[in-house]
Amino acid sequence: TRKPSHDGLFLTKYVVAALSNLKRPTVSGLASGIDQLAHEESLRYHIPTIAVLGNGIFKDFPKGSEALRELIVSCGGMTPCSAGIVIL
View 1 (cartoon, rainbow, N blue to C red):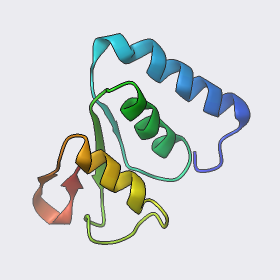
View 2: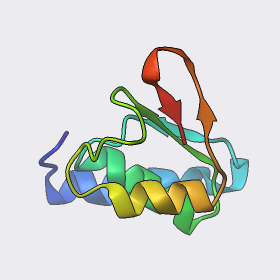
View 3: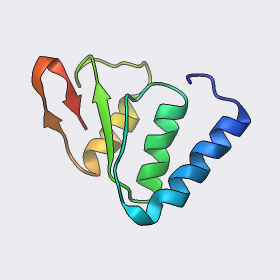
């Protein structure tokens, strides 16, 4: 959700921390709220994270996500896919 409750934020952090030993990548769409928090926590625990962008990497969407996109790229790179979708 884009406007998570305190419980939602806590549970996202808890789940990512609990799964950190598995080192399985997280996958999300980089939307504001839970999606971005999951990416941030994944980076915190050195878990690979994949952001699937429907608008491509050159569009600042969602607004204000540029710094997080750049951090994801700096921690693991990107792979271009078809139809303008970029996986970070």
